[in-house]
Length: 290
Image (cartoon, rainbow, N blue to C red; front, side):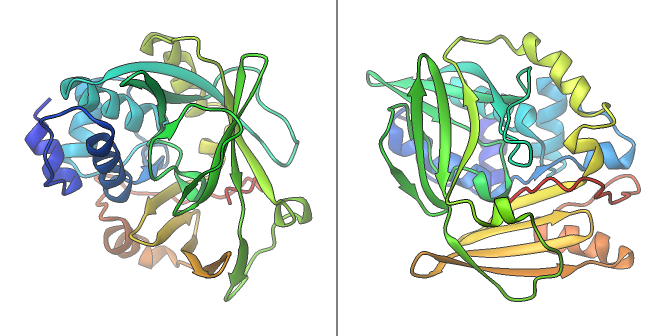
């Protein structure tokens, strides 16, 4: 780990001498605003490797992004290098269209023990459900952040992450979402337990999500990045830009369709991504990411 090279990648210029909550929160927010959540490799004919050296080269040196197992594996290395106590946890991501969770874990997140308290650090969820700060692991307490109000609910050893949704003002709605999703007041994002995981336990999941015909990541090309006041996301050909809380309890949403010949320019200008291989956008799934 070349920590200075990583800090340059995320434009972090703060101190890192003391492994405290303020430092971790600052580094984390810089990470999510510099490193996209993306699965573009799948749609460029590349494989996603669960290997620290490959992830470091991809995200830090090639200035790409990654999905949960890449972003959070890299973040765990950063935090451990700085002296934090980090544990891998496995989660199951909620699917609103079927009101259910998958049978197997499909998400990697981090638990950090700090000054006698536990925090969840998750830099690899992306879209409008991406945390901007570490969350203290306490049940039933609202933890407001710029993207919205998050909270954990614990039931018999299972923890649920929820986000309270704001209303949306959509400037140019081009595609409709399901009525159920539109009417949601609160979204359960994922569930997890505090059973520690080893990175080896995610290898099957990492392979399955990039090859299974019904995988969200096979049926959708996704690239999202948190901005200073919101988020931008390119899903297939649809570019969505959200400004959080532009009016009281309302987000401003702007949607436009990107033509194939604009794709390379859009990835560079909006996400600072330049791809080595030809990218083929895909959006075959009707699952809602917002």
